[in-house]
Picture 1 (cartoon, one colour):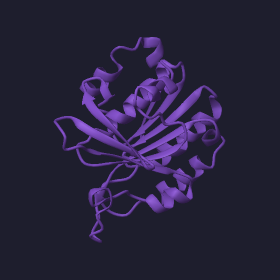
Picture 2 (cartoon, rainbow, N blue to C red; picture 1 turned 45 degrees about the vertical axis):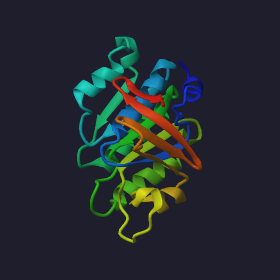
Picture 3 (tube, rainbow, N blue to C red; picture 1 turned 120 degrees about the vertical axis):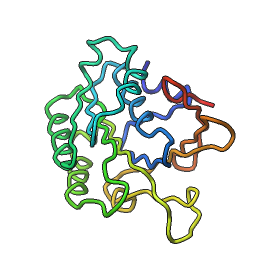
Picture 4 (cartoon, rainbow, N blue to C red; picture 1 turned 180 degrees about the vertical axis):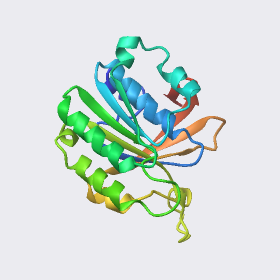
Length: 205
């Protein structure tokens, strides 16, 4: 399955610099794992930077169908509190391996408090790297309540959106859809795509 094939099925593929702002409980990590699976199925490599390991049961549900040789192209970097170092390591790895097609940074910034200046500097360096010209970058973070009272994106704001925009990132939104259990919607620019969250990932609703 190529990433363009998955777009045809209704799941937008990340092939540029994207920041996914996620409403709580909507499955942001699942969406990112699905993007990674799409790349692996297309014979590419993925670098996954994270604060902590993905839930093993969810990982198995999405990746259990892949053979060991394919899983070997999934490079996981658990950064913990040193997220900036994890992002820098991912950039260096991508510079040395042309087969890397996607870098995912899951929970790139904490859900509360200020965005780290060091992390922003590392994201800026990644966005300005040679890799950014040939591969996809996906940053995932939890959205937060908009204290200004503006009802944009259901009263939610994306963390670091203005700075990320300066670095060339587009912000996508993953939110609940009240039409039914497991229903979600992803907003890419002006387009909204209705999705359904299943055991093996998102499907077009």
